[in-house]
Structure formats: structure tokens, C-alpha cells
Image (cartoon, rainbow, N blue to C red; front, side):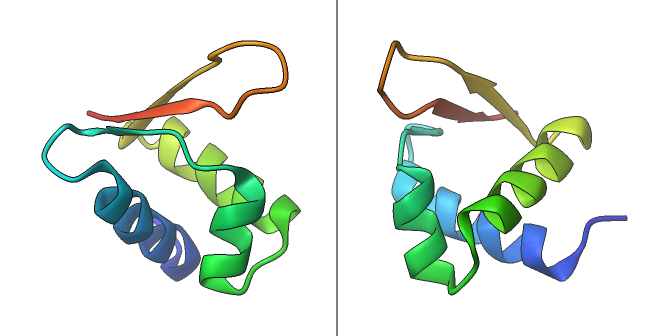
Length: 70
């Protein structure tokens, strides 16, 4: 079961990803867009990743992660 906040985050990431299925927004951007704290966004991301909905990859030092839809 996925929380409502995680569903909202998934939908926002889908808008950023478009047809490519990949996006790399900053946590701060997602937090502002959804009205959550950055820590809450991290929790929802962890929920989506552990649920098998997303994959996160580091892009480099001081860069946002790359999120891929599975």
C-alpha cells in the first residue's frame, strides 16, 4: 500500500519526466511544489523506491538524483 503523499509525489515526478520516463528535480523543488518538507519528500521517495515504482541514481557530487520510472 502506498500513502497518498507518495502518490502525489509520483504524479509530480511523472509530469517532470514526460514521455522519457526520467527526471532529476531537486528535493527542494519537489517540496515547494507539493507543500511538504524536504524530509517528507525523502520518505515518500523511499516508499516509491522500495515499492518498485521508481529507481534513483546519483548523478554526481552536489547534483540531484536521476529518477527513473519502472
